[in-house]
Length: 272
Image (tube, rainbow, N blue to C red; front, side, top):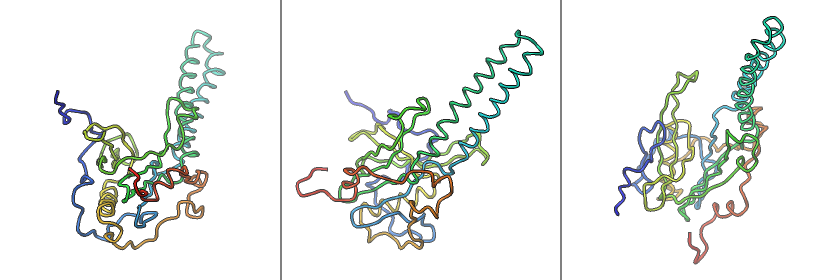
């Protein structure tokens, strides 16, 4: 039976278009004035791109804390002010207050955990010699908000040729006019167009496009093909460069085995 892979679901929410595939010919020149922040590390083996899945930390937990406080005050007012005057016939208001408070609590805890536990940086390493990509991925679950197994750093590695960069744009109820743009990296099942994973790349489409062109240049031609970066790379572990809320976040610590593999080429006879 022949499978039509074009009919398989592969588009992310708000998908606009795909960037160039890893195997397509990279650009001959890049405008140095339009380059994104300098990659964290570049050598003959790998390039490391900084990444942060949350653009601004602290506002989520602060907003959630305010919502939780207001819902709790509402519950107190209903319990100690409304009921004595109206009577127990209006006790349903307490149930509503409890539901609102529980909902605010359930939304606030994940936001607080993300602000505190999400690493300062979630880098991606593109290994040219192995032709593999290593994601320092932080997993979380908004349903199991107290789980340890479902929360935490879970690095993953995929073949470079199986990646697709997707430019996405959606409207959401936010103060910036509702437009949210980002670039996601979709991972295809080898030999098919079936998407088996999606990972965050950048908060800005133009920055994502620039990084993607840099990466394709590096993966196909090596570090000598890259343009000269004007700004030095940022030290993501430097407390003096971080906001107070980001200083509470843990530093990046790759597992030893994947750290070594992502920074080295394959040994003689090793299959990648």
